[in-house]
Image 1 (cartoon, rainbow, N blue to C red):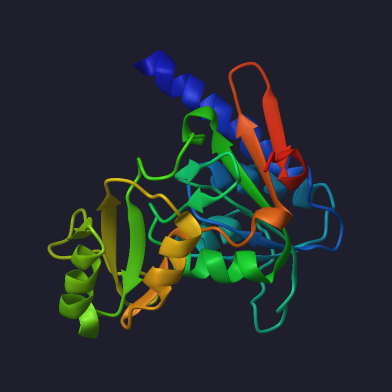
Image 2: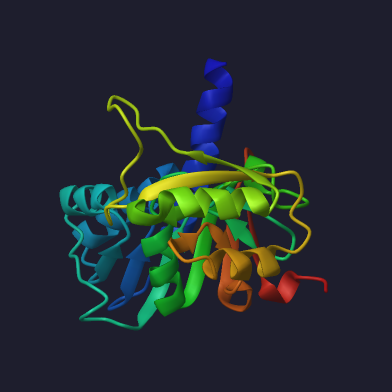
Amino acid sequence: MEKKAETLTAAKRAAGYRAAEMVEEGMVVGLGTGSTVYFTIERLSERVRDGLRIAAIPTSFQTALRAKEAHIPLTTLDDNPVIDIAIDGADEVDPKLRLIKGRGAAHLREKCVAAAAKHFVVVVDEQKMVKKLGVAAVPVEVLPFAITPVLGQLSGLGCVPIVREAVKKDGPVITDNGNFVVDCRFREIKNPEKLEAVLASIPGIIESGLFCGFTKKTTVIIGGLKKVKIISSADIVA
């Protein structure tokens, strides 16, 4: 088990470091939330110490803390509504580069940053690559005021919706935006784009963890035991 964990960590580090090398002088960089992106922050910190000048937009309080500790200058979407590159992780990536995200409960801000970015880089280990989305639950961020009717409508879509419970705290997870997270398990996701649109249309749902609209500007960096593999939209077979 210890050897497996070390291998997984090495794969994440390889992907995270490779993404950091894509950042160029003067760029505004969106920084996602998660263990693989933290290796990107680690490598960017080294490059900043060596003289690289960048500004980063963190997608969560946790990422902001890590970036500050790494002495990476921070900025905001208000000051930089267009971002050069966004680097983030994923829970699942399918062959068309569609994603499920949100295990870290930061998918609302992550989607805002991805939408603002010219180039969206997704860093994952090999086990995150799937033939079809849906093994992982689809997280949705929900306004607490509307939680009961939203749960009813989610059940009507054929999923099992579960309000995510916090760890070391009684009650639900509260996002950085003050909302709840509901993890939705579907038997099958036949059309991820359609499901993303349906979820977005439900009053009270602020955002889902389905990322289907960024495939044309997405590059996926897959960390492996022996090498790093890179896939972009040009590699997708329709």
